[in-house]
Image (cartoon, rainbow, N blue to C red; front, side, top):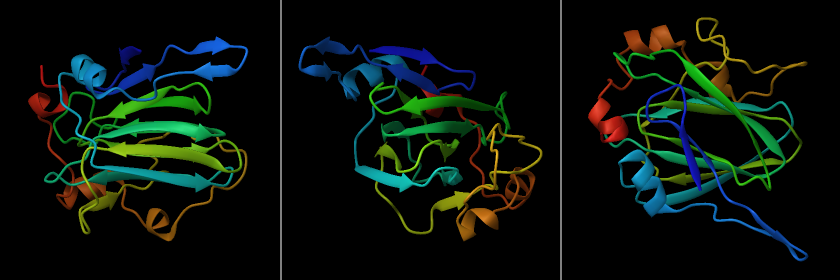
Length: 195
């Protein structure tokens, strides 16, 4: 596995080594020990979720309050998606910045999102399926949303038509409103990357 830290501190793009033969292919989709070595943080697996989306569905930008916090390891297991991570940690040197990566089924490529960041994606195909490996289980009342089309964020959704959004995402606050409401996590470089 190759781990490459992206523009936002603590966010990693993970690319596996794929072994091909006449039967097909094989790759390791997740290795807690290798992830820990690369990020300097343990990743206890507490929950695994999947969501299936129609083309041009936009889900996010979603976050979890700290505590409890929640790191994510996301990959595409069917179709393709545009994965976006946004730095929503107040005080971070990259606050408001984003990184975008296309994830495709079969490539095995994944994105590690440490706790305290916002995450969202756009389905590039019908029945695009994302897998979330999570460091903490769902706790009601700890999730929050940032509007995915916040003009200040100017995220590169690259839509040609209208996006399909949940009602929650449609009515989510902008990053500035969420910060003013005091719901965003604070920057803590020791929590982010453990270095």
